[in-house]
Length: 243
Ligand code: NAD
Image (cartoon, rainbow, N blue to C red):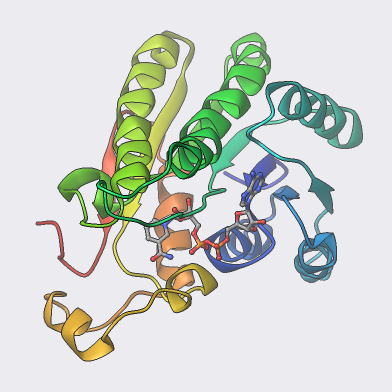
């Protein structure tokens, strides 16, 4: 069902985005990999995808920039002949307690995590509507469901993504277009490796007793991209943290 489709994956140079790109490629989808810096990393993932016999290209684009996102979608359409799937995975953290958080840190996280997803949906939706098909998956987080001390900006952006997901799902459902979210818990990526955490204490908070892998999240993303009769859903991939 994903065979021959074209997917845009933002934040695909590493971590969860790269795992989604590899998984989609293994299922026969062409992939447009978007990252904000270090294009060589995205290009290496792209080369892995191409080695699976599908088309893949990497693109440098700051999704927080409305116009740049518009040009990106136009370029992907030109390069691949269309766009069928969108995975809004690009995300950043600028952690800090609410008493000391700067306005710049709040804005930066909202701009990438929430507005970035809006920009991409805003520019892909017209293509999806014309085709009367398309599927969107947004990467939220358990922080958006539960809150997390030190992550007011991040949790707000991820909770906002859930409202955006459900609204887009309702607006586009009549044309057969789905929009869902995945809410990962603690996944082993560069993002979480950078956090100053006591790993033993962390594992005590996860019912399944271990962190997740990017591949486990990618599996959920692909499931939702394929599932034609699920829309507006938030699927937790969190080892039970937020149940
Ligand atoms: P990561 O930090 O390893 O990778 C982030 C990716 O986003 C990179 O490819 C980076 O280039 C890209 N990116 C950052 N800013 C961008 C911008 N302005 N424009 C375009 N691309 C940009 O992250 P990850 O751990 O793989 O997480 C991926 C997504 O999953 C994020 O949205 C994150 O919030 C979410 N998530 C991760 C975890 C986790 O435990 N790792 C948990 C919950 C949710």
